[in-house]
Length: 317
Image (cartoon, rainbow, N blue to C red; front, side, top):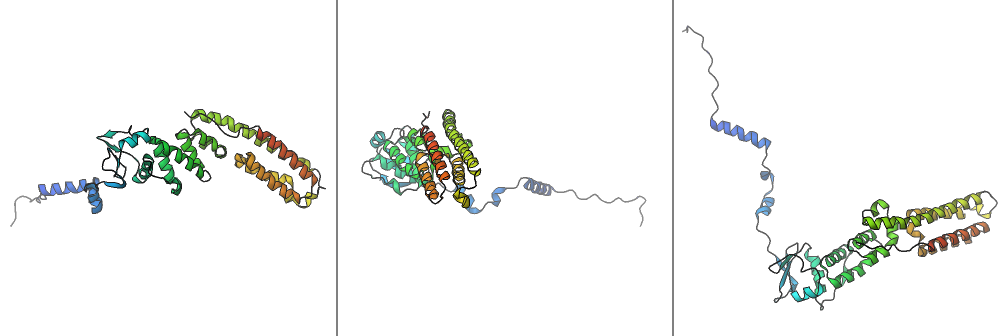
């Protein structure tokens, strides 16, 4: 059977509204993936779980307390208002909401700090490591707990050998001018680009003048070593020429290298130890010229160092 006209193919079926919406949702999910589906169930539970109820300190839980302090890790400390007023100058200046104080320090720090509020507690700061002691000291300064401030500062001085830079920052931040003066050797040994991040601008300018006087002594030592070396090398008949490692010029060069790396090695106490070691070496040298040159160098350096200020004293604003 034939038709008088050509048959055209039927158009493809039009997508239903359900298929259109499904395709649209799939394209959107590719562009904007739902990250909530990728999170584990524990994370989702932690986001919507009720907050952990606060616990109360077993040591500071007086029933007749008027003030409740909340630590950063949600621990309650119940304190007597009279004790806080007498022993602290800044704790009550924090924001108090219905006799509740919310502080930024954790409970392990506040537990030690609040011992200084009550006279019947005997606080032993010696058992703390440096990090814990520094945290307690900063909290004492922040809230003005008077006895804790002095006690912490005294104990921090015992950590000068290994934590001198941290103590410098603490001294500047809380205006501990006496501690800063005691840390003068450490301040001299630090590079200026780090010192400028520690000292305030006015104190940094004064320190540059202080350091310049010590640098001039170093330059004088360098000139003396060169002068001694040239004069010594002109005569090869000295007894020390058989053992060059004992020559005074080589020993003084090592001394100068150490002084450039650590200018605090020019302080009198360290100078005395260094010169004593050099004298022991020169005993077996047998060279009279080396011994005379050493005595001349020693007297010159000691005279110049005695004229220098031994501590960096400045007012911290």
